[in-house]
Length: 453
Image 1 (cartoon, rainbow, N blue to C red):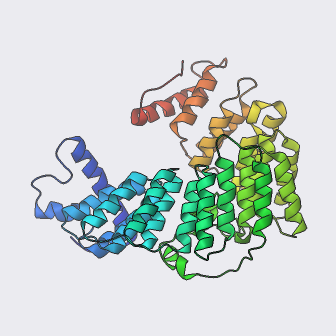
Image 2 (image 1 turned 90 degrees about the horizontal axis):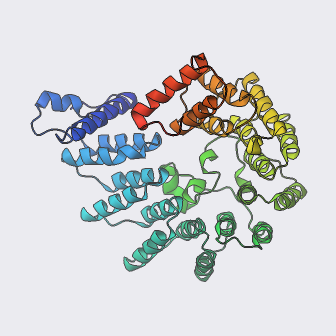
């Protein structure tokens, strides 16, 4: 087993080994086979000590491939390599990022079987994974487990718990966490107020006072002054490349590492305006924007994106377009903002909305922005629901993707194909034939064609 020379070779060999293992398992032979020659074993293996396996696992976490972590871990054990504490931390961070709660608990149990007790930072990652998976009961059990094992809670732990409970709208338990924090001498910071807003947004049945509560929490949060600092609590998170936004499951988590996309001092407004969009509360949005303007803050891309989404979900296309144009005329506009406007404008498939969506996509093309698979899938799925009209927008999106050789996900291709079949298009039309071919190829991989007749 030669030492891997670089990460590209490592990743390629890992993919090859994983594919071989999957093929062997499907054939009922086992992951590596009973009898393997030394040369074959050396060729197929991609790591031979704990340092190399930690590099493999770190690479998978960085690439957001949590579904391969169990395979790498199993290979590690089959090689007789003993995992260490850092190995389990990387594995659990990877499962947290990938919202794979069952795998996270599996690695925790494996850690214990090897005589390693989880520390407070690892519990924070586990609780965060519970929040991502909206399993607040599991988060509470983890809290009880920490107390039973004498693990001292940190400020981060309380905030992780608060936001995990907020994900399921359990306002009573969120308030209980706030009381525990106060009793422990900890003040509330912006992430705590963000959790309170999220809890009321997710509360079921919905509460009539939720808009008022959102405004109240934003106002109260002003008593906490933002200071840019690196706290001792966050040292491990930085080392593991976990942002506070990701640890606490904030809606800005996926943009936290994007330079210039969000201004971190505006966290409370990010969460509040995102809640307005989810709740379709235009009045609350405009009250927040008024408060925002009075504080002389400048909009970042995320705030504009969520405000545009809110206006569109409330049917106010003109306000959404105005906000988009004001921002794009003065600041760099990310592709996500174009996609938000185009997708939201298609709600209801009104003539005005479809016109705005088409114009937005054309502007996007003019500025040399390209759709990635996720954006293309979301847009094509939305556009394919148009029942009347010439299907112009859906066709335009499909052509944008084809130009870049991007294949959208199966549901979007199915919906697009169904929309084409509902129109008077000859069976030998090149577009229809091409879409049918792509759909057939996807079906070979993901299942039978559904509802296409």
